[in-house]
Length: 462
Image 1 (cartoon, rainbow, N blue to C red):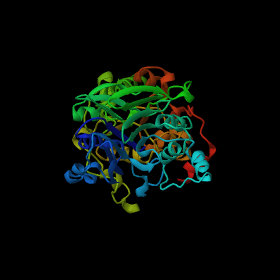
Image 2: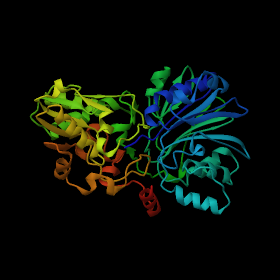
Image 3: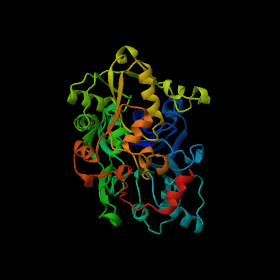
Image 4: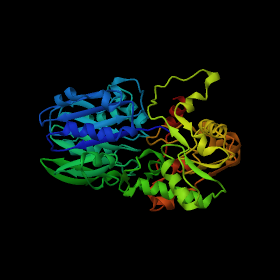
């Protein structure tokens, strides 16, 4: 599993670019390929974007040049479109008949290929390959007169996941798709409305969380006035919030979908301990996403919690892969066991998921080599059997080990003494709400939106 995108926006603040920079800093975990900020002074939109982490893309001089009182920002991990094309870095900024416009998008459209092909047939020319650019073209080509009408017209054609921030010379608009796949939070900073993918961005800048942007809601801010609208074409859409946000993607100190990520993850661990108990001496997490559910597992089971695996936080995605004879270094450079905590012990290892299984096998071997007597793997989510088409960069179905292997077969493959997954029922109960609130397609294949065959074929090619 890989991160996807984080977005941040602020209205009517003299330090808009700087606060957006800080917001993106807090959301860095959601995307590490590129970052960008667009800002307006009411007359024109200026922007800067580039490949790299937030701190490397922006410096004091660059931020000082982005003057204006309204800004939006974006961190990207590519789930649609080539990661090495500058034209795919967001926010996307364009000039057209009604003025300028900037867009920052988190999510993935399942009908983007269909829409793009139709737009190209009508004469549209695309610079990049992202589905986000499709949204821009739909707005620009709409026959509606006013901007809000154009925007609503474009949104009525979209299917899939999109949390959007749209900025014009005079407006800031926050949008969440009718299914509510991706989180989008609303807050306030000294009278300035702010929006972010997660509330951890508000904590950093001292903003107050107000509420979530609701699924299917369009929040328009213009001339200091905030208005709320509904996307009319999808009023009957079923709420389908991505439960994997709780499992892995969101920061544990964030609040999304109205719930504390920390408390939900701990509840996952408690439920996992009830469903898959084991006689053991120590519970250890695979950091970082396994830490909080490990605490819940430890507290429920009474088995002591220890940090038996230490993560190297300075390893980036550009780590050079070793030769075949040194293949295990790829994991060891990121994780290192503490033999003093593991030697002669029966160890419970908590991780958030198993995707292909190769990393889990290396972790189990590493713990055994450190002297563990038994290694019991516990996963704080159900088996991942189906790919995601709504903004998570997952492998295709044939590459997901749980789609072709039973739990016992996976256990043998990763060389653990036992393996237990959290059930879907237990996960939903721990997350709060009901089945109707969440998308669980990656676990059960029940996609809330029909997936076109062209999208499935394209995913296999990529």
